[in-house]
Image (cartoon, rainbow, N blue to C red):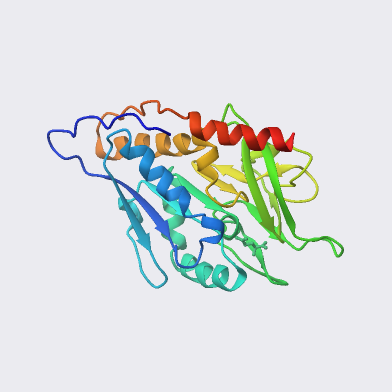
Length: 262
Ligand code: GLN
């Protein structure tokens, strides 16, 4: 966006909105971490102070001081290492999610949130924070690799993305899809139901790699709105307005993809 001019800094510097990027050194395929830069910049354009905490392998963070969490995807070896660290944080992560903490998780990071996921050929334990599981594809099935267009309740425009995964994900009770695949290409969670990703409380899980939010600014603002609302309640402050931004560049990119894939 050609962002709005930043507003005047507040007289007393407000405490920043804290975005935690978990395990950027393990989970960052296809530039997934670009989503964090987008979330950060969309707050800056609005004059809202923001701090990004990158929590690397072997490091820790106090999630009670965090307003938004991001988890990317990674190759098998890194995904397994990441899952071991996340399993050790399971109680804190579950409390964060149950306390309406917004979280965006992509591909490998998304799979780890479920009860089990596929590590190579082996089914391994996930966090079980979302009632869902990732299983093996049928014997003849390949990886799902394609562009896709979704309809999502989080956006009035189509959501465009790119998937690349072997595991097939099935959602349980109380977990909705992030969207429905409406393009002829792209599969989403599995071969059967055209559901893509997951929503539970303020969690968005998706197979859409890369900077998903660059072409889907409404999804970025949905996450930011949840972060600001929850933070205001916690701080006993008024919810800051999420001023509209000029999204023409983002939506032009979205439209190019949508037209190509229709
Ligand atoms: N290992 C996962 C799968 O293929 C994908 C990991 C990723 O983030 N691409 O199902």
